[in-house]
View 1 (tube, rainbow, N blue to C red):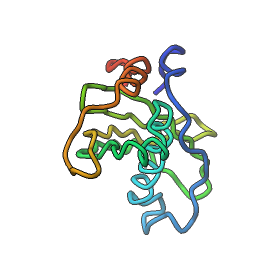
View 2 (tube, rainbow, N blue to C red):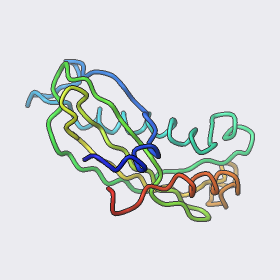
View 3 (cartoon, helix red, strand yellow):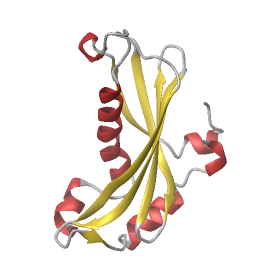
Length: 150
């Protein structure tokens, strides 16, 4: 799925690598655990793009906590395929952020997987939801991908 140029510029490249043979299951394609691991790693990059860096998390003692994930597996990823993940923000409210991830085969530009991760901003000490930092919320809202483009 290609987005218009404006929406493409709102995405952040959050992964670039290949499918290792050990990541493939008995059906010959990348196992679901590795799709989820790539989304998990990509989250750190897209969060940093809106100001939620490791230093921010350590200093402010708050971070988005995943509460739900939707994944669509669209094409097989095979050993040796080079993949790129692009990620962005699709929802930003006072306490919630929703991130979008798109995994694409570099060689063919085929989208192999999309994911939406729904998060709640968590106070890491109180272990309950808390308001997002105003600067983070403003940056997330400035980078919102349109819902109809996904």
